[in-house]
Image: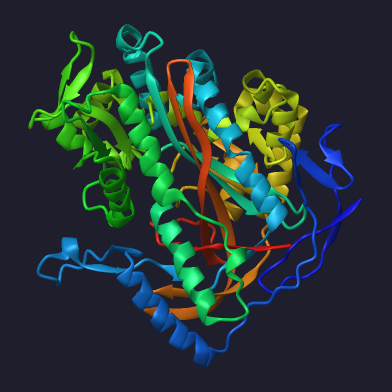
Length: 525
């Protein structure tokens, strides 16, 4: 059996043998999941090309559309009288990027499985502690999160007792690996999964571009419901917690001087317009200074204005710089002890670490949390090569030792990842090689990952009203929302997508970090 894989914006034909799947998944060349067939090989002939003169005019229209429709970020330029309200269009790609329809739709369909996996892993706190313990010895941030988990366990047990409300807004990030033709998972984000709302607006922008360009078919731009699904999930959690009649609010935990506030404020708008649920924006420092926890009375947090908190929704707290003092850690512990829904809990945040991602890829580990062998086998189809760097594993596991030796010999084929979020933290090339050669116990804080090799595209990238055409690579994120009240799962669904496109010479891919632009998928058959 052979398949055709889409390569680049000018799609080419590539053929490879399809890897083995468990019996029953494949039938007549289709992958069957949940009784739905997915065509995972196809020939694409779509071309998206525009000349320089047309590009300039289209860029101008795209920038105007973005500013008119809220596809914006804060400018934060001090020369304005009030820089906090100055805006500029978000970094964007003028044209969408082609992806094979079957692969894209399968990534959407498995997102509820990843939601379930996060919940199952987070529930097993003993697994989190044993797996992350070695990394925590050399990564103080992971260590502090583990200590917070342990310090709040008794308080959480008092008011939860099967009544806890769990909220997850996740994003599973992939690159289309050209050698295998598969989407391979880069990471699974469980905290501050950003750009969902601006990504939905990117889909609308590219629909507008399709109205201008006959070569673009609107039907190939998949629906992107993040603007509705994320507020709906937060509201479902708030309703399950209660306090609505008492004026309960959502606290959005944010960073000071947030440049991506407009993506967040679309969620605030959705919460009010769709659910009449008010949002209060607070930093961890604000919470430490003004919020009060009634631990004896059931764990309710009230703000200085008297409103009880239904949900703490984090758009901060994922990096050590978000905790500049003990006050911020005290706020995180207060939140964790409360009866509010948290997105995420500390356990959910730890379940999204790189070390957990790597450990789940080991034989038999994933299957402890996903009991259906067909579901587990399907999730494994999205796993890239992942290896522990704990010295004991390097010394005793021949597969790990071989991967480390190969990474030293061919560093361009691997990535070295610490337990960090936010972009700009990974090691590549000579820096990766030197770190592996130096070795030592501190490598326990890292994992080694196969470098995914996506197809190169040509893209028109637009930043600050200026455009350039570049050789680019793209990364796809699929959002998932999950709400559980005690043992009852109230919500578990795929909730939209994000595409980030960067120049092919960039190792990192964050939009907020300045490495990438927002984009959209264009599905080809």
